[in-house]
Length: 202
Image 1 (cartoon, rainbow, N blue to C red):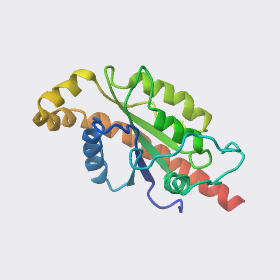
Image 2: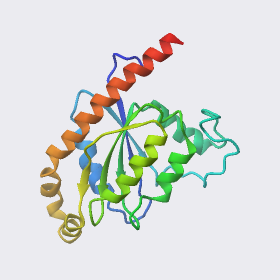
Image 3: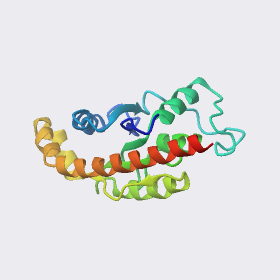
Image 4: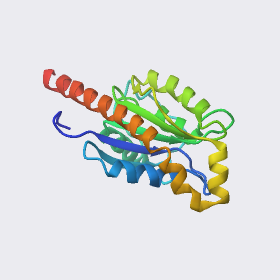
């Protein structure tokens, strides 16, 4: 992507459960980001794009963009198009989903030197899952933003019990989401420019 074009942010939906909560924040985030003119958005839903368990014969850092299945290729190319990522993550047993870890393990250069931010949900707003993810993405040479969106258990319970309350709960978090995405767009643009310079130099 040319350095003078707006960055593409891919929203990764981590939960693969049939009854997941993720669809509600996804709708809110897509609507909010879709109204901006400083970025483009795509959605990568891991429930609809599943990989086999990681068993590649060569680590992805040593075999860049080597895809062994069509599913790998489709996800890899979607990740490659992105300049940054916003991950909507659930929290299982103080951690994040196996599907998300599987995707992170399958790829390297597609993620490398790109920005990433998080929106978590769970009893403590997905904060423990997000802290683990920060460690993992640093190994992929990614830049994670300081701020994150946290949807806590009491908010989730209220939305489940009173679906009509969802709009108001998410609206109250608009400023937080904007802060996260402002940072993400800044880092995505800066790193997009730096990667473009590398390509020109090469």
